[in-house]
Amino acid sequence: MDVTQSSKSPSDWTEIDSSYRFPTLFLASKAVAWLLLGSIFSLIASIKMHSPSFLASCPWVTYGVMIPAALNAVVYGFALQGAFAALLWITMRLGQVKLVGPGYLFIGSALWNIGVLLGVIGIMAGHGSGHTYLEMPGFVSPILFAAYTLIGGIALVTFHKRQVRELYPSQWFIFAALYWFPWILTAGSYLLVMSPVRGVTQMIIGGWYASGLNVIVLGFVGIAIIQYMLPKLTKRDLHNGYLSLFSFWIIMLFGGFTGLLPGQSLPSWVGSLSAVCSVFVAFAWLVLAYNIYRTIGGVSGKSGGLSYKFIYFSAAAGLLSAVLTAWASRASVADVIQFTLFLPGLKWLHLYGFVGMGLLGCIHYFLPKITGIEWSRPAQWTAIFWTYAIGTSLVGIAFLVGGWKHGKGLIDPETPFMDVVREGIAPFVRMSTVGELLVFVAAALLCWNVTTLFCRTYCSCLCLGGLSQNKAGTSSETKKSQPKKSSKNK
Image (tube, rainbow, N blue to C red; front, side, top):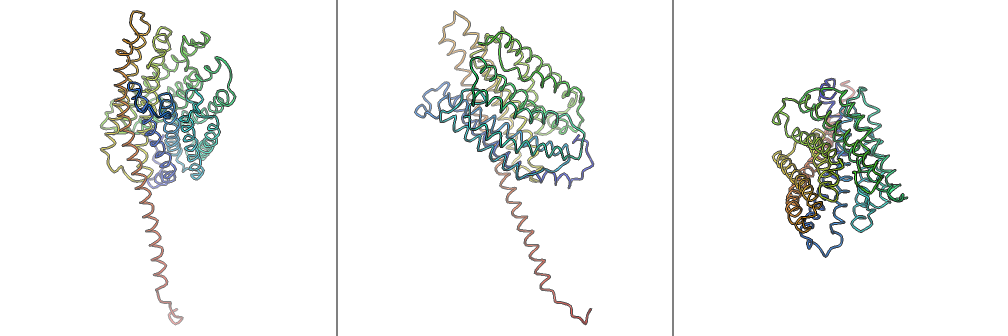
């Protein structure tokens, strides 16, 4: 475990971190840029919900375009790209190994950003597929797969050459996510976009892809970060590795079948199976929460630092999201929340609260270690945490509470529809707009800080390079200026 490892000297850790300097700066800077762009798209869509005339003359920014564009920008541009940066660093630290093939990683990450950019432009141009999380045009999936082959291949080779052969629980989740993503990407893209299946099978496969991406891939990313960062920040060992192993297999077996609700236009057994799987996943999360609680019990936020607050918020949001998803899978509840803001609220809580906050905490912690340069304005990171946390909470509460009230009003035959809209939707939508504005501000501050760190690192490397060249030139000139000894003095 990285917390207790003392075989490496500080210089050795510096060499390991420096081998990952510019690839991770590239990944992290592009990830936060996509978060900023996705928050802009999401904010525009939120404003349009209560002010339809806003930017009404531009067909590229309609509500139906902004929602999938924001979702794909945040999932593929921010969440997965930030996950690549964080998981590679954790792999290097736990394995005590330098990054293998940083040039190939840079090519893969550049190709990944090209694919995501083309996909978002394709959605905004009206060429989206209409399938949630796979709205990007069909030609984008091969680009993403080729990029992922390079990135995932570098991760596997680096893992293979590790010096510490013992596996830490975070590594189980890391490489399960790395293996699972190409499988669901190829299967989902082929069956839904390239050669679409017919009928209700599309809905089943779409739900399978959504649950696999959210619960297993992004879920395992968030769990790996939590199980690595919280023990590290509190300087404690993980309470029980077997509890983590139990949760790992439960989520692995049942997490891919939680994307459908009872009452949808599907065979009844499909919704029932999805509900049972959601309960199993929630139980696994309760076990993980108990294990983390026993690990960090008694540690305050001040002693853990700001990164601790990021990761702690992420763990709380992940647990709440899993429990609410299991509760929403009940038939009596599903009848109320369908066609409301409740389901987007669950998605927001999982993506922005659980995955997003965990990635931000990891970026805040490891970027200064990799670059050797501390954040220039630590107070801005405190502002980022509180702005992002309050904004995410406001949106989550507005969607969940407003969605439940909206659904109760829709199933009540005595309540007029316009009263439901005015009292059950409009106030909560305005509240969510305020929250999304705060998330946008946090993303802008985050982008500024990461960009500033990138520029400072680049300038310091240029200065060090010039200094080393000047030293080399001075030493060579000194040698030339020294008089040669005559043969009489020999």
